[in-house]
Length: 414
Image 1 (tube, rainbow, N blue to C red):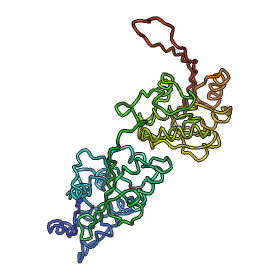
Image 2 (tube, helix red, strand yellow):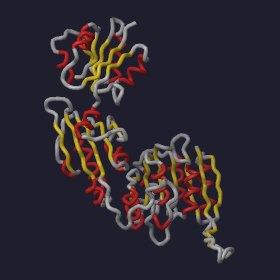
Image 3 (tube, rainbow, N blue to C red):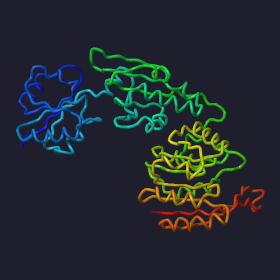
Image 4 (cartoon, rainbow, N blue to C red):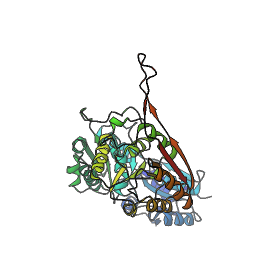
């Protein structure tokens, strides 16, 4: 049975034994930039892209003999190795790795990388990965033609400027390694603005580092834990915030997925979303809030806790929901009297196995929300939560506590 031989490439030459093996094959899979490595060799060549067509042609070529595949660096590290192993099985696939791009880049940067987060940007839009980049002290990026270093730097700069996060803009330093192992290899470094203004070759690795910022008044106090922020640790106005105990119940009822989309309708200060974003950093959260005061509080909380997986949508639901991606979870904390329009829209957009949770202080809302959910094909239940807060001291044990307003929490499930 014919076999697949994947050779990793690092540099501008192939070892003689690999050239001999390639010459004995019926075909070779090779990208345009690696064609020069096969100069003078008469052999059927299969383009790498598009991958689906390449795999089909490779399968056909195996009917006539072994097939070689040339791949950059380590084929099992964000490479073609995974695809070919899944398609042809480990018994038929043989892999010879070379130094990976991340190994070469970290060597040039003199950077230990055993704890370095790595993100591949291949096939992603820049806006999808900004929060994943900003949530880490340092991260190495595998870029592509759509996500070059200048585009990524520009995207990050735009997001941070929008939130007036000048401290983080100053703290970010970027290093880029281009054409590693080749004659025109180049290293550069700079700020977000520096990198945003340059052009780069297609072959590069991008390292983004955030220098530690000095402790300042108002900085996030919650670095040591992921759940349990107190009301005075979240920016809000005039006491308009979901109370700590109620927030915990809401998060429990939402059963947040690790990834996906959460809509927070009528977000107020964004306290529920702040806790959700800290619990699930890969969850994308859209807060819909129409009040300028609330919007400013939300932006302040995003900056304070570095929660750029939260996207602020300024407007009133349901109109503000029109262009948002379908939600896996919906929380309705405020409706501005439009609950009868909001719940049907959210229920229609909710993905399979999705959940909707609404909190109600007013009796009318507590009665209306479950009926609306049920009539929109959601399995619905509700509970009422009453909380008494009491500071217990030895000297005044038994003094009456503070009774918070009871809150009804309605849950709808697809």
